[in-house]
Length: 370
Image: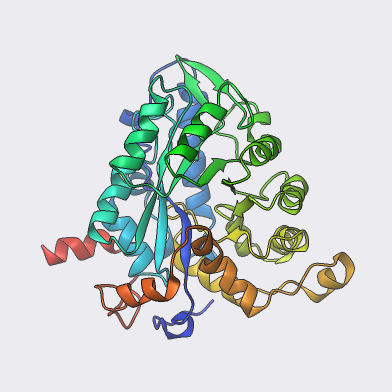
């Protein structure tokens, strides 16, 4: 990975980070209950472990302190990391509806709203929805009317009244009413968290099997499997092959780029490409889970090993495919005009920058400006 601070070598690539979060996992944000230690505390610790250990060459500059990471619900920190410190052009902020684990859901939508207010051409929102909210239909209306979300974010599990509860996206009584209402309100993108269990809870809800039933029932909606391929890789790839309205979001999955051997990421990406994913894979670093810049650069330089293409039939990762994955695919599903969008952001505060800022300096920049 280059140490150069110049951004010219990726300047003509449109980069859309399809999932970014402003985490708030401070202890005071944990919901009290008998599963607090098994879920809220363990999830908080797991998130930080992934953040602090999956860094290029073990260089600490790419990691936040534990305390700063737990309170990363900061639009300055997140926006600066994405747009001033990396080559990312635009992002989709995901609110999370883990209201039984974290009081504000864990990744509060308010952070995304603040980011979009400051950088309206660079930030879009996926709104968090939980079927365990008694007013979930009203929540969807609010997300559409007031928050102007471009998609919804679902989680298959939460703590409800102190108990672990899960549901399937193909459940006609629990999930379908929400999907039907979202469709009536013009929402087409449905992102669902998969593959990574949230603490010491059952693994079954995090399998992607239920996505198929939802994809069949709602063929005019797009279902985005977030963390696709980290687990259940074969089933995820087969779903892409069978259902043209199933896409895969590489949040978390892109972390495999840091392995010394490229073969794990090559297996993941190659499987998805082989079964028809070229036009339906979305790039993501999960910022602030990881600093975006090194992952963008590693992906642009990445190639599937020749022996894996020969022996397993994985397609070669061409520049055209990389451009699709890094931004053009998701932009197409969102009906965005990429050329017009890039023209808008060309002369904003980040577009005028000639060099990349140092990692995680957003708050310092704000304090200096003040």
